[in-house]
Structures are given as structure tokens and as C-alpha cells.
Length: 221
Ligand SMILES: [Mg+2]
Image 1 (cartoon, rainbow, N blue to C red):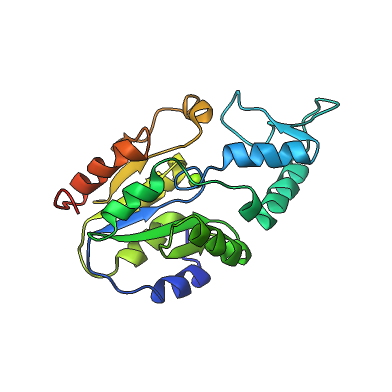
Image 2 (image 1 turned 120 degrees about the horizontal axis):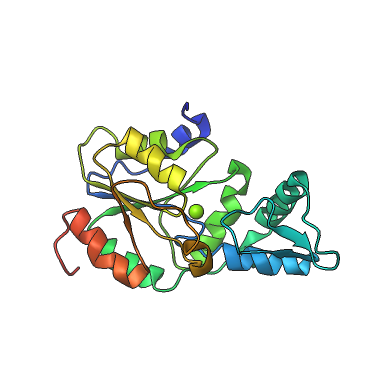
């Protein structure tokens, strides 16, 4: 898949850091998504079923219990992202763990969402004490991570909840250390087996030392 030119523009504005690189997905990694989206849906008269690993097909009307159409699901997701800063919460222990890694690594947040939501998300991340640069993309994540790394052959670690994003980074940055994290335990239990080479992280407390080791960082900041 080709690069996203707006993503490339955003990456060009980064600081050209040469330290080891940690790239993090946002939804279900540093921010909770499933629970806040569920609460938003309830406020709109819908419910998200979490007995299978998908969003489309799993949203039902509260009263009729009928699944809503794919188009309606997309509209509800767009509606959520328009106001997501009023709903989303930070994943437990993410702030403290990233604070401890930040002096020793470049941390970049890479979110797959329409670029027009980026400014609202930036404001939310700042309010939640996650001041790290935010890059949005409407294309595959692998080429974006390769571009963020730049020409320095520095260590790269990448964390995401969606297997296809991990596979995309594996294809574009073959030496990247790949981690899976998903803050919603119910959905996590329903996941298919992770792609080869991907290490599962339980939570942010567990993640700190494993990321530090993957990036070759000295212990203790
Ligand atoms: Mg995600």
C-alpha cells in the first residue's frame, strides 16, 4: 500500500531524533477505546456486543436488539470520533511507564484515523499527560513506521492491538520488535493467535521492562 502524503508531511515535522524508537498505536493501547465507545453507543440508543472480535455486525439497537447496517456502524464511529475527547480514558499505568521510558527513547504515537480528527485527539492526549508527537494515517502503518525511523538504523519497537497493523510493520521494518497490547480484556480473549514473532503484553506495568529490553535501553531512568 502506498504512503499517505499527509502522514509523510507530519513525519517530516518530527524532531529527527536518533535515539531508539518506540511507536505506539493509540486506540486500545494508550487510550481505552472499546469501553468508551460502548458508553457512547448506549447514549445514542445502541449497544456493542463483545462476544466476538469485531465492531461491524456487533452493534444492536437497544430496544429492538436488531444489528445495525454497516453504513450505520460507520456513521456511529464517525460520530464517536467527532466527540471522542469527551469519552476516551487513558489506559492504566500508561502515563507512568512512558514517563520512565521517555528520557531514553523517542516515543511517537501513530493513529489510524481520518486526519481531520487529529487536532481533537492532540488536545485530549495533552490533557491526559501524553505529550508525545501524534501522527495520523489513513494508509497502512508499516511504511509510516519505516519513514519515522528514518535513515538511522536505530532499534524500533511497535505496539498495536490490531494484527494487520503488526503484520504491516513486520513487512516494512523487518527488524522491528513487535508487541501486542489491547486494553479491553474481553476482546483480547477472543483474538485469533498473534502473528509469528509478536510478543503479547498484558498491561503497561508489564510492558515497561520488556520495551526497554527490546530497545536495548539501560535499566532505570
Ligand atoms: Mg488500536
